[in-house]
Amino acid sequence: MSVAVGFVPTEEGRAALDAAIDEAVLRGTDLRILGPGQAENTHDAQEELARLLERAEAAGVRTKVRQMTSDDDPGDLIVDVSYEDDVELVVIGVRRRSRVGKLLLGSTAQRVILEAGCAVHAVKPPVGPHN
Image (cartoon, rainbow, N blue to C red; front, side, top):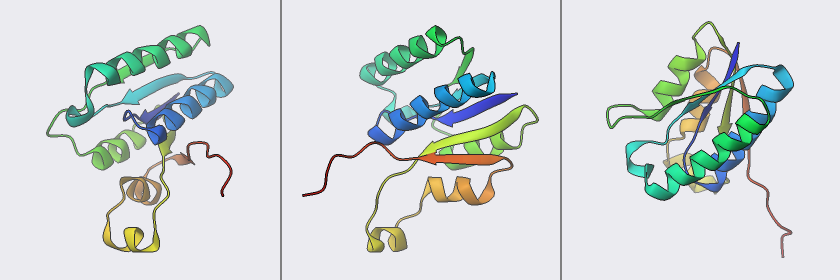
């Protein structure tokens, strides 16, 4: 079995990958990382992904990375992977949005939550105190 996670080099993406590593450790499963997408695939993003892969390796988690291509729609890819026989959990990062933002903007996370073929764990990045 495995845990799948969509990764982008954002606070939400880091929170998702951290949570996915923790879930893979708890479940004793492999980790499948999808991303980053071509637009986000910078040198810094690759370095960050390498650091997180080292963390997974140190925790004893076997990982497999699938880089997204320009033809891949992140939501479609994550939903498709969620239907594969060996995927038992998808972890996604979510961000806070205003009411108007929720109404006007599509949400990959919302699509994954509603359409995934397995359980979905949605995580938010940590926040500081509100002033």
